Length: 114
Image (tube, rainbow, N blue to C red):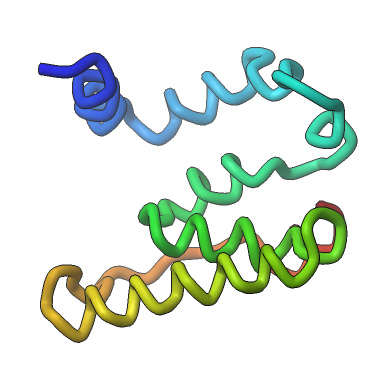
């Protein structure tokens, strides 16, 4: 088993409360390269964790919310590319539509701050 797969499987067994504790233990205070994440209340990975976002929607939300402050139209292109992958995967039955209701962090507030 690969190290990454093992980490993902271990993470799935952690209760949500434990995951929240891990986030508060200083991991958000560390940033590799730059300091832009230290200047926001909600970091993108917290948005993803709190909303239990799968990979493709997480990537879409990342690029759609950062385009004004990062790479402009290139980020919009990337978000569209991820949307196309998501759409194709749903249409081909590779992915299933989510069935459970979630209480999301407001995307507008996240985008405004990031």
